[in-house]
Image 1 (cartoon, protein in one colour):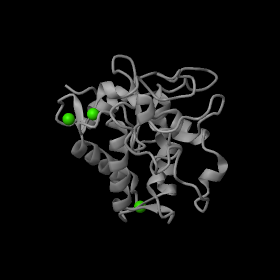
Image 2 (tube, rainbow, N blue to C red; image 1 turned 90 degrees about the vertical axis):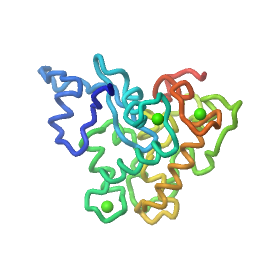
Image 3 (cartoon, protein in one colour; image 1 turned 90 degrees about the horizontal axis):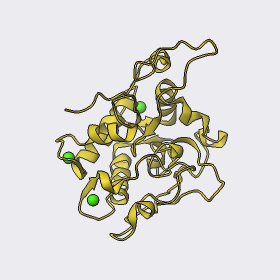
Image 4 (cartoon, helix red, strand yellow; image 1 turned 135 degrees about the vertical axis):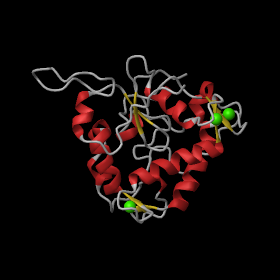
Length: 225
Ligand SMILES: [Ca+2]
Ligand SMILES: [Ca+2]
Ligand SMILES: [Ca+2]
């Protein structure tokens, strides 16, 4: 049975403040910190909690729709497109940075706290994310570390979602906007999703196994594997 996905899509901030794990908001100085955040390769927020596993565990179970313990290319693609539909608030078939930011404000404010100001400007260049489009397959001997793409150098703080995900991409959604039009189309999403699958499928067997992934987000505090 899949664990309950603690995902607060489109919900009000009140839901965030009460916590995904049913944590009460009882601190006199403000809300307790929300459960640890995980940002999926597609940019979707998952929060683990007591008895639920980590956010990464929840995303994996969510993506593994047939529950065979591995994520196929089709499952990975469906996962990306399902989240795209969530983000596309005005249902015009594209996703803009405003739509992304609006969703992040509701469910993953930690991501916004780490985004450099220039990256929030829709006209800024270099929206390729930390890994960039060059993040191809790392080969069967690459190991998880190589497969995740470029890590920030020691002492450098990764920005945005890169602190909470696997691919070191500050803006996983807008990173798909390869023509820098300010909006992500379905074609762009599909192409980016395929690239990501290749990066995560470290052994090249066309499935993402849990063992191919790190134990958690590739944050700056995590020692290299
Ligand atoms: Ca599966
Ligand atoms: Ca839209
Ligand atoms: Ca694999």
